[in-house]
Amino acid sequence: MASTRQDTVTVDLGGRTVTVPKGGLYDRYRMDTDLDDVARDPRVSGVEFFRRLPKTRVDSPIGDTLTPNFYYRVSTARLTMLARSRAIRARLPRELAPLEIAPGLGLVSVMFFRYDVCDIDFYTEAAVGIAVKPARHGGLGLVDLVAALKNEDLDTYVLSLPVSTDIAQVRGRDGYGFPKWVTPLDVIVDADRTAARVANEEGGTDLAFAAATPAQRTYPSGTRVSTLTSYTSIGGAWHSTLSQTNVLAAGAARLPRGAALQVGEGRMAEDLRSLRPLKTVRFDVMTEGQLALHMPVPASLPNRTR
Image 1 (cartoon, helix red, strand yellow):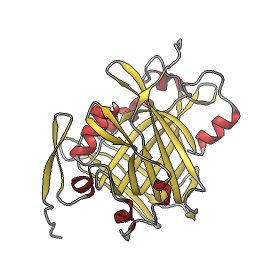
Image 2: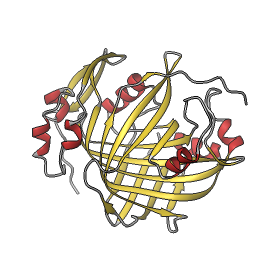
Image 3: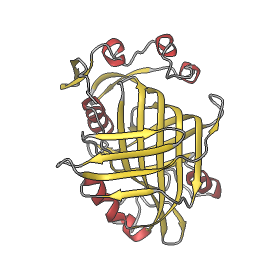
Image 4: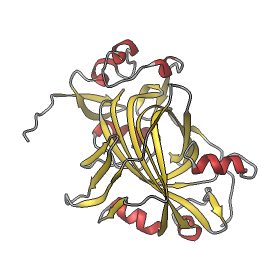
């Protein structure tokens, strides 16, 4: 099938030059997107969720910008796996501790994301992450654990986060402190099938995945909003990044069968192997959602002993 090359323009992000689609949302609005314009996009169910989240202008490592970054049409897939805490701790900074569901057992995940309409235009993303204890002081309660298992309120540390576009890489790496790089990355999520492939530097397979999509349930906008807090180090100081997901259609399968995860050769594959996952316990798919990604803020993490 023939492909068409999209015209691009160059923009500056705090001294870094990146290309973005000409006439795209970032080219036209520079994060100050007209919600009425987005509402006319047939791929977007509505923008009410975003009208309740005013943006703030901040100075950041990528220059003057607005936060949060709005994602108007999102689909995601997450494989949650058990892994030994010893293997997990070997990959965590000393200040973070694994979220354990039983003594010696923690949670790791492989995630795939497709952002069809957002302030920085279409891109795809994948991640290998570790569920960690919240940075707040005090013990972890049962409510925290149940919410984390259902991916409704999760704290995480990301080992790998490849993306498909330059602007997503620069913003994520320099602005948020995430381990991002650009690579060919395909993600398809629909009501029937979920599939993804992350390429390595040689063009081969780093990670690939395919499975039937779990049955989806629809939710009115604003009735199911989940949160994810990610911890990163920026300039030697710890920060936390909050993302809020407005779930519109989602489903899950426990102890999923027929989920084919191919672990090839590459940075993601190496990170996943190092965690030595034991068993996949849950497969979550959101075929439609929306997301508000806030800029990082300084975080105080407790001193922990191994």
